[in-house]
Length: 406
Ligand SMILES: Cc1ncc(COP(=O)(O)O)c(C=O)c1O
Image: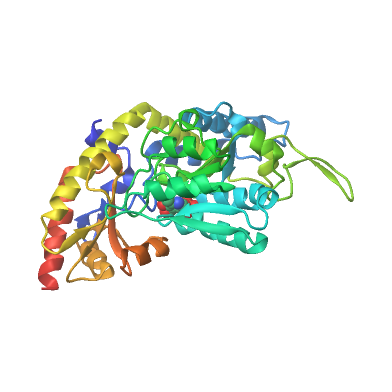
């Protein structure tokens, strides 16, 4: 992968912040967008802006073809069996809520167990808390070990004791831990447990082959994978989608409506009520093309290299404590850390003065912060446009933080 050539395709990377070149190390929160995606959004509005699935006129047909084309590309990106298994959503949060409201309300009853892990993002906790409260179901959490990996014996025990659902993240947005999901899904399925995988931090960064992993649901956010904000998707096995009741009601998700009754549209449209984020989906299709042209194994290899370099460089800064697995093979491009002397918000604001954007806070993972016994961490997260020189500047910025708070 030629990183310099890739960087030239991201116009924002040419800007300066506080007089310094922007060093964007917060792709875990949202990624930057290449010119091809920005152009696709402009093209939609300037050339064929129309609603989809409605008009019989030319530009509506063009919009429908692009929108459905994006679904096809997304399906092939994760190796889904067919495009009908992809429901467009605003992102991971909406996709998980869709499953909790629709599948969850139909399938979870009093006393049922839902297995989660302590490393989940709030998006994969709150929908299940709401459901568990309503249905009087029970939530069970798998703990992590000292390296930030899931305690597999604990998980195995919970799986063996039985549950209706296991909902877990593929890659932790704080620890970076890549969970061994294929093996986990196999064990869960052999005990009749449905599995939802939160792919917000994996789908943008590595090859995710849904047929190989075998999970029942997968969720992802377009804005973390070069696509516009408000785009994302739910993958679900078609049989599951067909059995699930609608999530939101309104236009497009119906086949027939009478005064007191209605019939639903086929999947996936049964779950796409109202006018959708059309240019978001089209942009997602272009982002998928961009990633596929680079090759997801190249993207992953690049991130492993830069993450390994960051682990080495940051651990050389006195007083820095890094969270998550020490080996790059079992982690994604996310490095969360704290410093003896400075609060994460102070770290982030001093780095901002250097043009370096990192995240500081609880990263929407408060239960994990409690487990790690910290109120917050700083977090640098990398993507295909980051380079080693930026890691050097990050390490240099942290030396500055150390001097300020010495
Ligand atoms: C692991 C994980 N799950 C879920 C989400 C929520 O994604 P979104 O805000 O795009 O819905 C995030 C976002 O940071 C995440 O990192």
